[in-house]
Amino acid sequence: MEKKTLPFSKEQLKEITKKYPTPFHIYDEKGIKDYAEYFVSNFSWNNGFKEYFAVKALPNPYIMKILHQKGFGADCSSMAELLLAEKVGMRGDEIMFTSNDTPAEEYQKAIELGAILNLDDITHIDYIEEYVGIPELVCFRYNPGALKGGNAIIGNPEESKYGFTREQLFEGYKRLKEKGVKRFGIHTMVASNELDADYFVETAEIIFDTIVDIHKELGVRFEFANLGGGIGIPYKREHKSVDMKKVSDGIKELYEKYIEANDLAPLKIFFESGRAITGPFGYLVARVLHMKETYKKYVGLDASMHNLMRPAIYKAYHHITIPGKEDQPHDKLYDVTGSLCENNDKFAINRLLPKVDVGDMVVIHDTGAHGHSMGFNYNGKLRSAELLLRENGTVEQIRRAETHDDYFATLDFDGLESFS
Ligand SMILES: Cc1ncc(COP(=O)(O)O)c(C=O)c1O
Image (cartoon, rainbow, N blue to C red; front, side):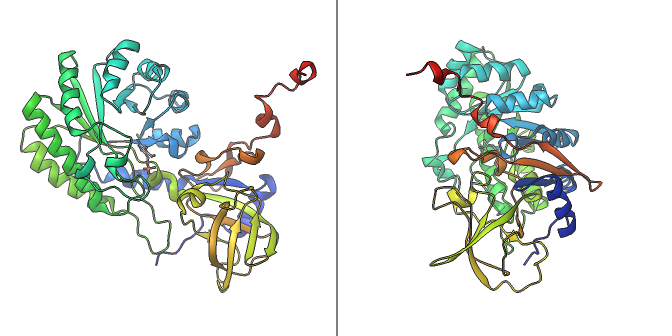
């Protein structure tokens, strides 16, 4: 079993919490950079390979800037994410706009930035033509339906709201061709938090096979295949991270078999991973406010599910460390809870931990993706700060905590006086 370690000592964390009160998410810059380099290095065989970081996983411009400096683009799904990419200085094909049920203003903004449009539905061809015009490069999101088994988080592709059917894909590219489009991409995303390397190789095979068929039927040549995100991370100690060398080797073999053999090279391979890139390098740091004992033993934190929703909505496992007590026997059974008026506001249920005391610091692991970004304000809870543990060991605040003024900023209290 892999050990779950922390990039800071208990003493360091104590110092950090003196300056920045809990709860907060803290990200490990070195971990993110090293993994980013590892990820990309596996695909050096593919000229033009690019990873578009899925901004929704960790929409913080400082993190995006770090990744941009490593050659990453941004996969955006909304106006806010496009604006963030713009702030970070990204333009053109550094941005992939993969959205669904998309409003015209967002397409407009994506076009303004020169982003690659990835359409989720065949009706969007007419929609973009009407509202923003058809760009010279267009990508479609393919939903392979029964051809591909889904997984627990994303579900069965046939039940999924995303993407074109195979028939719509052929019809769509035909229509684009008739409209004069010359540059094409294809995209799919059929898994979420998948740990099996073969799954991504199989996905590549479905896409490459489809590229060959579309070329045969329509004469369309593709510039890129975006294989989506969904690469899992070892939330549990018994999990193993995805071997990206294995993924890459498998894809390379298929590239030779389908793409090169049919004279369809060069084809750029893209990914739009979020979780794999930053997930393991984020930690939610909280403090124990109360210990409660009724029918069960509860550890009540100063963080709640508004800081990290995954355990509540997916019953997701997040490892918990009590700094300084790592080597004590983990023989006390607890539910670790937050303070929301929701009984599923639990970071862990029936978790064996060392004896916990009021005032202990608690570190919840693997919160670097779909953590802070899934936060919300129910019960008037405020979103926490985000900190960055720099490579040189210093800590920078890269997002301050919300205040009650932020929370109430959309209300006009003065209007109450004349309101009856
Ligand atoms: C279209 C799309 N791309 C990429 C991602 C990133 O997924 P992950 O963070 O699991 O890699 C998501 C996640 O929701 C997505 O919907």
